[in-house]
Amino acid sequence: MRALIVIGLLGSWAMPAVQTMQTAQPAIAVAAASRSMQPGELVVLTIVTTEPANAVRVRAFDQDLQPFRVDARTWRVFVGIDLDVAPKAYAVAIVAGEGAAAPRTTYNLVVKSKTFETRTLTVDPSFVNPPASATKRIQDEQARLAEIWKHSAATRLWTDGFIRPVPQAANSAFGKRSVFNGQPRGSHTGADFESPAGTPVKAPNAGRVVLAADLYFSGNTVIVDHGLGLFSLFAHFSSIAVHEGDVVTPGQILGRVGATGRVTGPHLHWMLRAGNARVDPLSLLALVGTGTAGTSGTTGTRRD
Image (cartoon, rainbow, N blue to C red; front, side, top):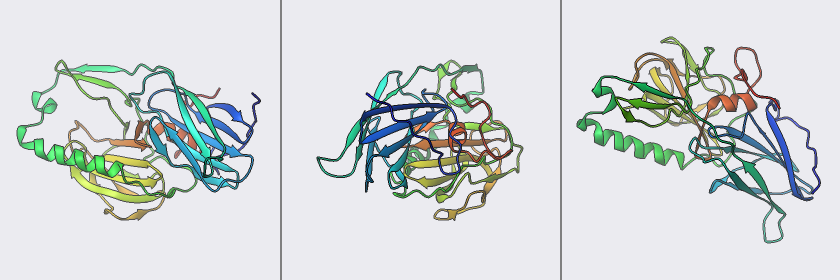
């Protein structure tokens, strides 16, 4: 098997981190970039075909993903490794073109294990178990969110690199497991930014607002669909500055940091979904951030 070296950038985006390459047949070459191949990470696959392809299909983790064209022979796709993915090798199936004769290959994505921190806290019981009166509201909101994740725009809505939504630093809470009063709870599925109340929150990139509402757990919440299965969810706003259906531009104010919902203090919670996988937003910034001082999220990026 012969390796084909592909050199390029994600438009104006830097390509840091782990880069590997596999070629199953001369017609298709695949390069991967990521901070690491672990649960909760984003992987950017660059697909280069010998001949121009009118379409490229990608399937990974039992999901059909949506690549986007870079030029006549180059496509890219965001592959999210979900928080709960087990460590082992996973086949990413790639087909360039239509019909039975279309070139195809399989990229071997090897996920390594990762141990997330666990915190054990004793808190007021009302903070752990919502009252029975809130059950229906919580169920309805969960169903609404599940429906939103199914309907991303079929075209790429974002442009160029992603920016930090706030200037403050993010802690390492993504993936942290919690045990409240001896009861295990779900993992923390976002990045928390240590921003004071009232801090303006900027859209990390272009997209369409698909939710702007007060939810039981996340308080004042905004979800932006960036297209092709990529969603940003922002939680705990003190106030919301956009409406459902709005098309937002990079840097547009979505709302202001607050402490609404089930939280103990003001901060920004940013959750990212890529192809239905829950991934750390900082991995997105590390791979396709602008690189501008004060706006990118590349601190701590691993480069091999």
